[in-house]
Image 1: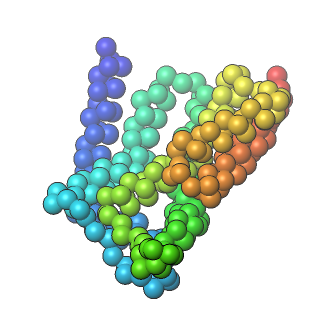
Image 2: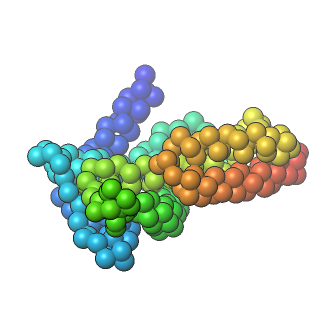
Length: 247
């Protein structure tokens, strides 16, 4: 019963933290969106096009503010939520278990931030530049006067940006997940190494499912995640060596 009371307290504190960061994020939603729009605005400017996004429904501007506040609010509250999770599980752990688990708790949000930054500063500019090349300044034949230009809506752009950030942020959790599984003995470095070709196929399928449908983004995500898979094998091997040394 005491554990349930403690769990309830931690959940309530996490919800309060989320509501606070969500409210603050709603107030600064314009600034957050302006920052998130930098990749597409920079590219449109380099193409000599109008640097503007539109909303096509009367309520769309408000709904975008809500989406930004939820998205940014959770990201900012995540460290506090993780800390509450740690405070809940830590009392039931031995000292050596705490020492083993704490690095994963710290590295997980850091790797998510690294993945999100990689998506924002590297992947999105490359992907958007590739996609903008499908515009058409002048048609051929009977449609020689036809021009095709990108006229993006704020809702569509925000959804696409969030998909990039979440996909790469979660993908960068792979070393944490596999190393943790190696720590508890559910996977081995030899098993992961022998599974390479199947992992490559699985990562390709994952890249096709979680990213926008363009080849450039899928190749970049595959390359990044497969590199992380190889790094995970190295970390699992280190964990195995440490375990054998302790014995």
